[in-house]
Image 1 (spheres, rainbow, N blue to C red):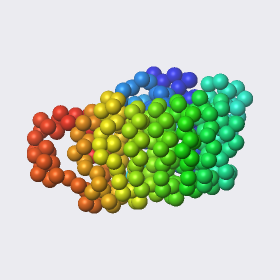
Image 2: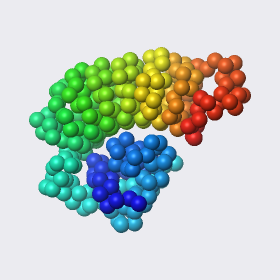
Image 3: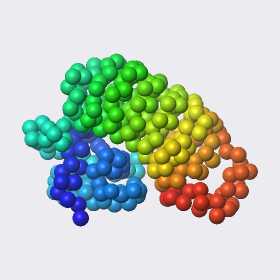
Length: 306
């Protein structure tokens, strides 16, 4: 049974997106899961059903709008009036539990004044024209940061230094973001990292510090040329409940990535490889591995979608 408080928190989370913005249902539930808004499920596949039920209830109550289907995914939108009212509630009555900062879509050219960040728990400055993040904000309470669909080119090395509890970081659709700062290693609480549709050429080895990572999206990173050896497989080894969804799509130079390194990811449930030419696989070893039902079960016993 889903509590009213849970429904409310999930609805407020949708307000981080701009007006009339189509939100992918599956990604929304993944974020809810990592943020701890759903019941204490240990696997995303179990949480997905509850998340789908919450979305269905919000749709039936006319608090969310059906956004249709695109690219094989179902989408939802927030009604403008509902979104405005919900954001007003967070400003006026929920400053302790749900302190939101939302400037999604107003065409900002610079990052907001960092003095306003201190008490913020969830921040969205997506769909703007911000090119540089040069400040070093001190955000002891920040858990959610949406920076997608900006024009980011540079993130200063100190930007992530004082955001110890950040759980969800969405940097996707920053088409000119060619490098991640070494300071990203400071995000030791991070569970969701979306780098899809960025121009990042190399994943920094400092990502190894993100030992709590559960969801990593590298989709459509057409400039990606290098993943440090054992980087992705290290998430599971360092903290046993780590990578639960990994996507590598349109990864044209994927010979730098050996899929066999994923065999120790004990919690991996979803693995997507589309249009990945020249994927380096030791074919004789792979053939033996696939042919052995024992090895398959022992290495990927949680995998339910490939």
